Length: 182
Image: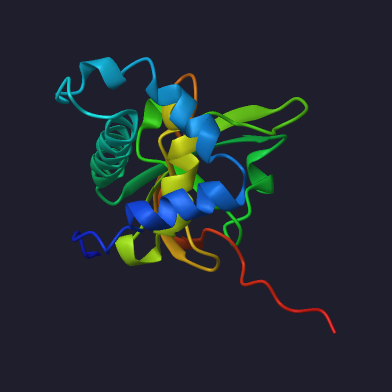
């Protein structure tokens, strides 16, 4: 199975700033610049506004470079009471490109923790949500898979032992298509 490996256009810096502004979060992000803005190669004669613009540009470039590291392999951790509870028709929408960053968030109760390794085409990535997710939680290295997107499952392994518990080689869906209720 082959997938495109070129990157579709990611949202622009202007789009990102507008999204953050609409959510009232632009100032929050800008405040995080203060610690590392000193390390940017900015003229000492630059105004505060010019420094801030340079910081936005550097930050945006860092984000785009970061999410560009995504090949086509994705990982998702799940906690299941039983492996029979794995729903291949709704594997979830937030994945990661780094197996070490996969955690079974929101999982409750006893059961086993598993890592699903999949392959997804870049055209099935929601780049806007991916960019925003990496603004707020960069350590999670998240990739947001579009609703209804196909995921080719390579393997399902025990999260801690590493042994394969379900043979891969089948197609699944990140999420079901959402139907409107009448």
